[in-house]
Length: 158
Image (cartoon, rainbow, N blue to C red):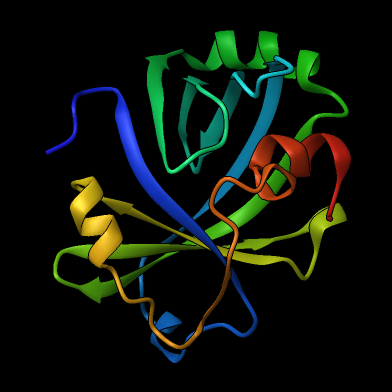
């Protein structure tokens, strides 16, 4: 099991949405970046449907630190303008993969319209290494800084 505040995740491009997408839970996400350090450490604001939070993450990698800090709607609205020019929006679909795993399939819109990615979070490094992606998952981009959400929000589509 991973330590609190640590995530083990792999990211893939998706060429075509999986047939399993119909009927799975989904939510709208808007996120903006308050700060991005040269090493990839980020501080971001996120709104998922009606839930808002501040997140601090270490740079792009399969294993990284991730901490969530609750903010209220007033704080979110006060900080959101500071993310201008460093934002993205997407719809996230939660596709079950079996073995307790879920693919978070992101369908981007606005400037990133047409980009599809999927992230799979694992309970351990061993589970990550043993994972065989389903055929609809395309090229793996884990650790590729060009596909990190912070890069997508600041530099656009690779």
